[in-house]
Image 1: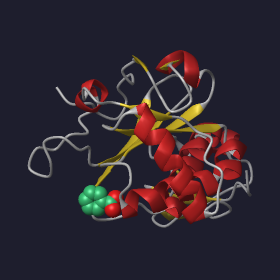
Image 2: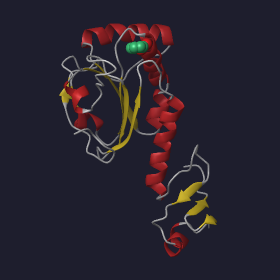
Image 3: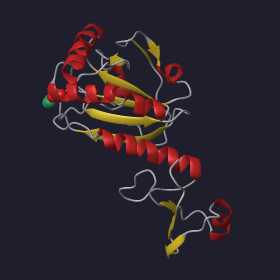
Length: 211
Ligand code: BEZ
């Protein structure tokens, strides 16, 4: 059965461009941005890897470790990382999994046979420090991912966890948040002493400032 939000992220041991890892141990107390890409030495993937490396300080600020995967070998990854660094003007440090036997891609349902039998599609898993899958996104091979959205959704998840709130459409840090319907007005008085705007009984906005 395929993975779903809320599931425990499957553990695995594997070789990567930075050496062998055991996934859960490697993740430790961090969040993980786990993303697959179709192949090394391809144009869209090169820009995505470069962007992830360029954003290393943003990921670190959020306690997030990036982890890439493709079905190529460690030797190919290492050679390609040189190209990524040269062409994207960066210094890629995060590990890229070598999943030549497709074991991990299969466990995470990253192979979509009607797209390709051998190459992974562009899957994203955001995994929290309890190793729970908090977000899944799947992009086709021909479309590079939006890294503003990847950081935004991490911010939204971490803000939701910290404040017990939900986030509205197009929310960005500093914007108004939503008091979930599961929180009664009595409880909300305690949790949100700053008050809220009640647009409807089920639609209450409050301010929490930038966290
Ligand atoms: C790319 O990364 O550029 C790519 C990979 C597979 C199919 C199409 C594009």
